[in-house]
Image (cartoon, rainbow over all chains, first blue to last red; front, side, top):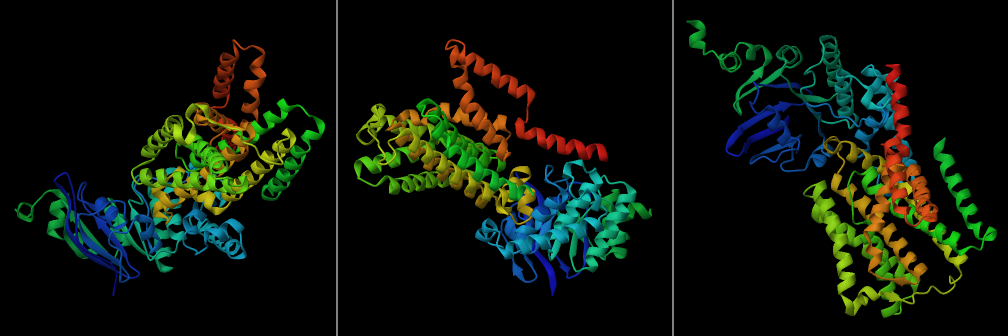
Length: 258
Length: 311
């Protein structure tokens, strides 16, 4: 059974069809790439399934559970978390606090337990802190654990966002341009970290412009153009797909071979 | 470490403040103490909503006045005991807060600011014009609290109420619930993506702050022994905003410190009645220039500077 199933997603803004009849499936334990030229509807489609945009039509389910129309916080609780294209962090809070916040709604501690700081709450807090420190070591930011997040560089912030998305132990993490504007060394590091986390059981759906990054990381790649899916398959097959070449390079196969 | 120190210091401060009437019988000083206690709770209530959660609220004075009017009406018209009227006033203030919060927050933060301002103005108008209920601008006089007729007793009651309410704020804000409120202020979409329901937490902040303001309102009008439409005056809103902004929005002790300072400063400037408001203005402008992020903001800047130089 597939992990995420999206069926018939439609979204238009003032008459412009941003996403048209988009359907796809991604499987458990996979890393899937979602690529396409600017304005092809990548961001809109993941905004829809993560609850930040309301689609006009379409349904989606995660691990067999229908999630259509749920608000973003409810989707996060159901196991679908995301990162953002722009760097988002709680700038004034320390890295550890940033990560602990990402876990606190998921550990089942009720408000009255939180107020009274019951043993259950203290235990959950300690577990979150341990995991946060562990993740910070994994992403190489252990020495900044108590620094406010706003002192991090752009690439480091992107790493922090990925780590935060991992705190809730999601079924699926949707990463919106995790390496856009990041230097090559850092890109290799992010790639390695995503692989490691994937081996630990998290599935990924990655939106990126960096095609090399997607091709080396993903088994399955979905290509969008003008709001529609034009290709969906193994990375190797996508590379040579004539429709993909046309969308990216603006040449038709006929012109290309002539 | 600070987690253990703060409650102990708080209890010591409360005991010390209870002892003040032993040193002075001056009604003027005790009244100033009551003003400090009242404003410390009101501005911490605003700090909870604005400083921590990031919602600008002009309705704090409405919660304060509603608590006062409800308690006064229940006692004078329906012969309620004050000790029942007090929580009833708090409940009414809370319900009003949840109502304006729920109706406006699904639109935007700005809608909440506007609705809260309108609500505060509306409360003032109703209290003036619904003469058959509130006696209009004549107000409801003769409010008395048996057993607390003595200024020292009233002072101790208000200080104790303020201590309990501030402790409740502290417990909330230092828990993970307070951390979630800060997350919503700092980056709401990020908080949402992590499973934090912003509406629920915002309503929590509004409800708690309205309840505390309502309690202080009920106590305050029985201290004055009269409630009239001036309890909804913009003066209270302005003073709360000054205390929160200069104390440092989001800084618990900064705002309490500012509540003490700015409850006293206007009185200290009384030596010149002509220049009083101008001097007050000078003090505010100077404070704004010296501490643009408030007293509490200085600490945050120091912390940031330490890490920036290390990088």
